[in-house]
Length: 257
Image 1 (cartoon, rainbow, N blue to C red):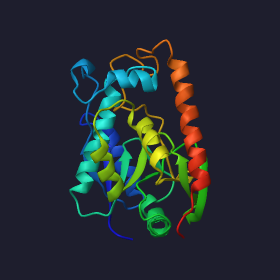
Image 2 (cartoon, rainbow, N blue to C red):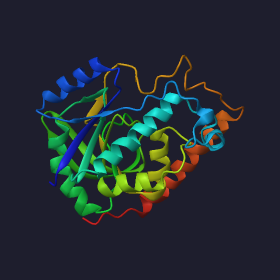
Image 3 (cartoon, rainbow, N blue to C red):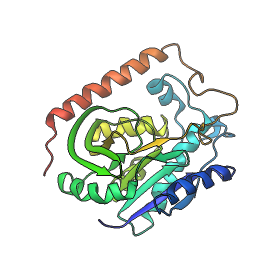
């Protein structure tokens, strides 16, 4: 396998969480580069040039919160840092990630297979808690964890543990204009339409019970933040459209190997 760099996204104020994930990764002998998370909790969204509130209202049925902007910008930041390196792949973990096996060992086995099946792959979600509309490819066992690499036509939510190819990270940065959805929603929007998104099931990484510091907002739940009267309709339309596209992608999918 070509070189892989591991990154951990962590707020400057969250030193205890940094130590906890360091201890978890030490269990597998893994080192990492820390990426200082963007703290969006105090952001005034009305002043942000890269936030499209109107489009967020149409697509999500609500406005975003500062923590979601911070999380999105943190993933932009780590993609930039990865592309400035010589690594071929990037394993990106948020600081609440809880590996169930050695993720680097798993990737060492799976990535060569994925490169043969889809040289243009862009992103793997290895921390998802649900999987729908997918095509199984290959099975792997690392330690006591057995899982399957799948083409994730309906790209899974959550960004606690993802793996970039250089092509994928470059596309993420090149296509970025404004933020209109949380980063996990955006990944689903993007990769469901373009393809080249993958996952493992059952996922080799879960999360701790700790609430996300990056997504925390100043006393305002993102689930109820400035919902439009049509919030439920917008959500159902979004899900229906994405599933329809994903089903068509699944029918047309043919791996190269």
